[in-house]
Length: 115
Image (cartoon, rainbow, N blue to C red; front, top):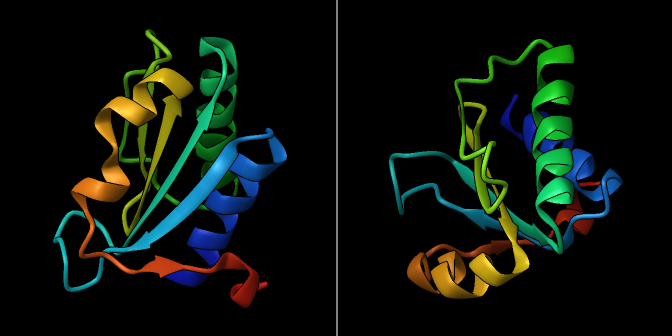
């Protein structure tokens, strides 16, 4: 289930032109989620569009969207869909928070391998 949810989230972000999509394997690193999908966009509107698409596609596929935080500001939106948490940043915020470095123990997943 996680692999298909991860692929769904990744593809939804990619379909809305998310930039620099990174997937961290959080298994054994954090109890928050099995994977983090991290991406960014250049405007608040596009950040919102990406997050909305991820949530909509997850809902359509029967997954429960547990939380959608930060939507109104469009600077950093967290979409919690259970085993996968999607972080959609405004480009300026992504560099500031640098989740990839913060969770440096988490290995990167190559999504090309799962297609």
